[in-house]
Structures are given as C-alpha cells and as structure tokens.
Length: 208
Image (cartoon, rainbow, N blue to C red):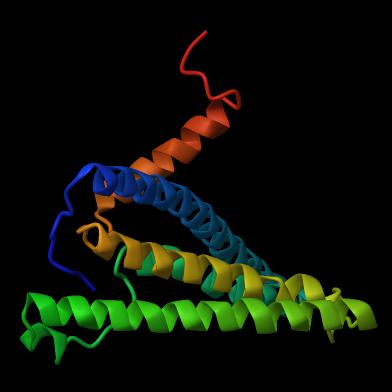
C-alpha cells in the first residue's frame, strides 16, 4: 500500500512534517516492541509444543496446560504483531485493481483502506475494553487446567486494536505530508535502534 510523494511546502508545512515524523517514530517504536513480544511469544510457543510432544510420547506424561497457554499466546501474537506488519506492507493484499490505477487513484485507495483500518481499530478498542471490564467484574476464568483470569488474555484485543489504529492513522498522516504509506526497512531499523538505545541508557544520554 503506497502513495506517490507530493511534498508539502511552507513554514507551517515544515513544522507539520516534523511533528508527524516525530509521532511516527513513537508509534513505530511501540509497534516494534509489540512485534518483539510477538516474536518471543512465538519462540516460547514452539518450545512449549516441543516440550509437550516429548513429554507425551517419550515419557507418557501429557502436559495439558501447554495447549491452553499456547492458545492464549497465539491470540497475543496475532493482535500485537499486526500493526508492525501493516506499517511495513507485509499483510496479504489484492492489487488487481490498484495496480491499474494512476498515482492519484492509488493514493485515494490507500486513504480509503487506512480509514477502514482506523475504524476497525477503534471498534477493537471500544468493544475489547468493554469485554475486559465485564470479564474482570465477574471474575471469569478460562476453562481448562490453568484457570487464568480471562480478562488478562482479552487485553490483547484493545491493545492490539489501539496499535493497529494508530499505525493506520500515522499512515494517513504520512500521506498528508507526501511520504510513502509503507515505511522502508531502514525506517523500521531506525525505530528498533532508537528503542534499543533507550534500553541501554535510561537517562537518554549518549555518553558519560
């Protein structure tokens, strides 16, 4: 999902561009953190599945809790990883129509698609948060062997929806300032490096 560049000009436009790109870096860092969590959760899920299979078929000691935990992690993996994948244009898309459009047509199609994602993100946040609050109020727990408070698992819905909606909103703002909707791998790497730098130096200093 890309749009042609039409840079805006003027003092106010320069300020607006700087603000948008600054906000975009913040959202990029949040999306990167969520994707990192998803990646770690995926690795943990794989390890637990291998452990469960070994215990079941080698030692004849089924670990039934693994199925429950991997299922919970799968929800988080999908919802928390979707925003970063969208920012980099890695979701499955059909370009049968958009590939035949001109620059303006592709720009309009990108705006329409991003607006739909923003609306979807808002829906996930509102409905997801209401579901979390309801489950927490009733003290609902998951079925199975873990009996985890289900609202903890459901938190992935509003959080993922918020990230998804923010990523789409930043895509709209990037279009407005003439940037590509899909960020380059260099920009994604820059956001990851910024997060790593903050982790290495909490005070934000570059040296002693």
